Image 1 (cartoon, helix red, strand yellow):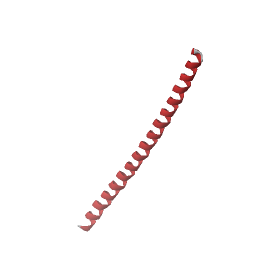
Image 2: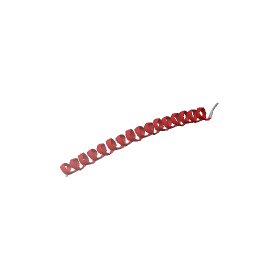
Image 3: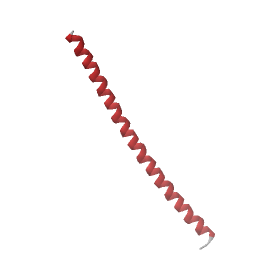
Image 4: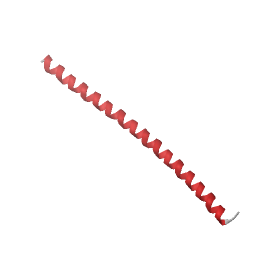
Length: 61
């Protein structure tokens, strides 16, 4: 095996390793984004419930 073949093999290995790392990063970013959307929806629901509770208290008085 010549030096050129060794460099070619190493280049292919590093390229594959980089693609795998990029795929993992993309998956993790997607997961974090979906968790963030869930939290935002929870906060919206909580704020709406608090507003409704305040409105109900005002009319009860």
